[in-house]
Image 1 (cartoon, helix red, strand yellow):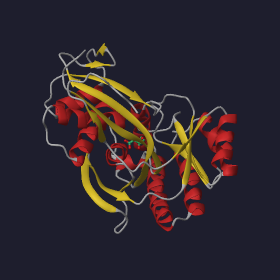
Image 2 (image 1 turned 90 degrees about the horizontal axis):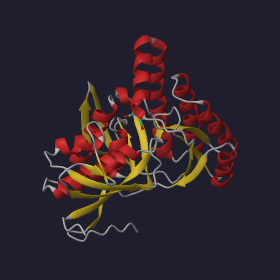
Image 3 (image 1 turned 30 degrees about the horizontal axis):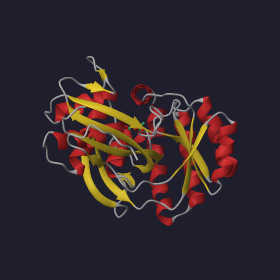
Image 4 (image 1 turned 180 degrees about the vertical axis):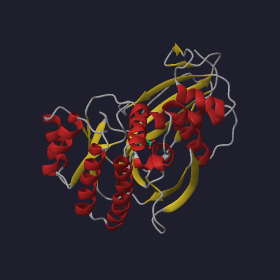
Length: 325
Ligand code: MEV
């Protein structure tokens, strides 16, 4: 039995309701934490190991980035999650936030939400290249998060700047609305898709216009959420999906799930980076949407907003046991 002190931390996944991709260029976005979590049991170790395997150079860049930022030694990590990986639902941001909290605790670094969010954002940037802090802020803080919302919308948490862009991170009241996620089953790593959009935007001025337009409709969506107007928000979500399709980040499987959900929804769109991964539908008929998603080859999940961000699950110095309730 391993007697070294260990700690168990977790962080929620997320879904982006509006504004993915354009948020990378400093435009607004809204995301909600979801009631699925990434759990990490972490202890100090000679080498970096993950789920029993020694990490070779270049493996696990998110974890390496967090260790580097905290000037920490190696760790062994046992990770488990019910968030499908590379699915657009924030598994890497949730991993980074939970590793950051664990490392800060184990190595005696000051623990505060803002610096965990900063570690997690640096890790995303290191692993995927250009990024925005929408995923990492949401997985760290939980609840609802708006970036660069207008004056008066949301409670200001902190500011982030990187790569020539600035984001004001705010907590928003989570809407009393039902969302169904449809997972295509296609793994779609974020980095290459963000890079594809960057090239498209650089070489095609209409792509830059689409990015601006997504920013504008996201602002309208923030107002719809504030008013609790599901019709309006749903229409804006569907418009957002059309714009993301023009940007080249949807795929036939995502379009199939979005189309299948629309007759039972206020609106539907891909969520996260696209290219596979997941879509979301805003609905009052979750069973009908789940059935439509299933019939069209997707995996449905009814998700709820998760109020709790990153947290210690159970600190078990010397116990060597890992219980996931
Ligand atoms: C990925 O979940 C969201 C993107 O906007 C990338 C990012 O914001 O880092 C595509």
